[in-house]
Image 1 (cartoon, rainbow, N blue to C red):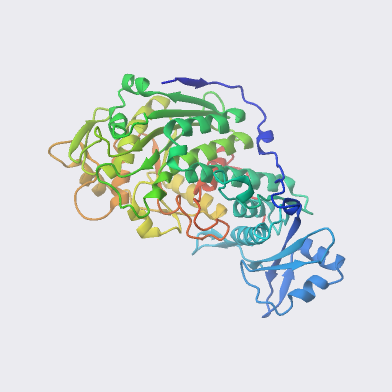
Image 2: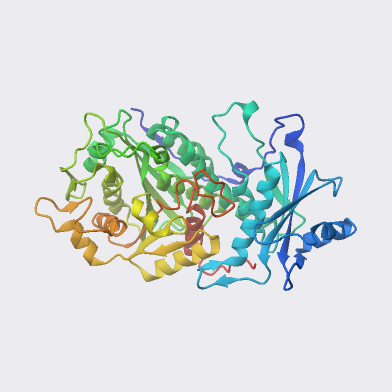
Length: 521
């Protein structure tokens, strides 16, 4: 086993995000140029109000744009594609951002202005992408960052394993006729980082083993000045990470332990600790999952993928904060050495863990990662993982389930979710759940717990038994972080979502720069 250690000086990473235009796939198709313009619903039925850029374009075309849209059914996310309107563009897509004048909706816990812009810009860019437009200029609407996020996320596809001649157009997006290039760049960086998480999640498990994930993390993060350390099995034995090693026993691919470090703050500042579940394929082990839908569990490393994407973004954005991340990488397979229901293993903090269900291996592996995190002396620990199907049943894809021991941390996370449109919902972290996973005669902690229901809450209680004694935040992303069902509209249906990457980035930005005011919308 090779032992990796990469320590690079911090460099200017803006070059990593440099735009490149797609090559033509079929003739000059990749060189087609398109434009996304914005419009809103007016106060009167059927009334259309253009953004400033769209109004200017309408004047330049002799009011033809407005004439062509009159009488159209125009509501949030609807797009009208018009050809031959300007010699500069193969097609112009006019996208509706819903009613004008919306803002923060307290009942929805959502900044509807920003989210509507993401929906509209994403719908317009996606529509142009699907007719073969390779270069897409996007109206800023009233918030360039949101427009960049929606359009960048909407045009993304996973095509790495297709022959080049069979691939769809890979469109580039850029800002059209607006001075807020800084806001656009910030939004693009966040969306590209989420797309990186999506690519890691979407890659088939035989192409994304623990070793290949670790190599991908090096390739993505080292150019940004993030320190990447990859620890092998011998190191884990030396550090007594026996629970992690036991969870990985069923696979022929050996586990790895990934440690990431970003130092943007003062040397004496305590770091934020991110811990992410990195199960690169979860068959369920001996508690085998049903065949139907099992392929989705190649994304059981979504927590790890989100952390890689977020670390890239905070490094490129240069946030003044120190962040460490710990990622246990493993496969959960039903091999001859696999864990059996009823086995008892010992965590690195000395607590015994009864493994009642082998398909709850993620929390067993995370136990050792959290216990190891004590040595880093963090100010806050954030755990991310696809831990329970019950959170998907409860919340669907509407929000990530969040458990917090701190009211301040929760309020900041809720604010971040409202800003990014990738919302969170607080779940209870009560003592009764701790009692249900600890009151056993034969072990200190049980990986299922006693009683009926409450599985996401029991998972959080389990993790708290091993976490550092500081403020703790756990995000269960099984409902949001895997395959998209088509909502929101700017995340293509059937592909992995990469959620909640942008919410995590926004949360860390709020921690690092608490006095910064959000951009106007």
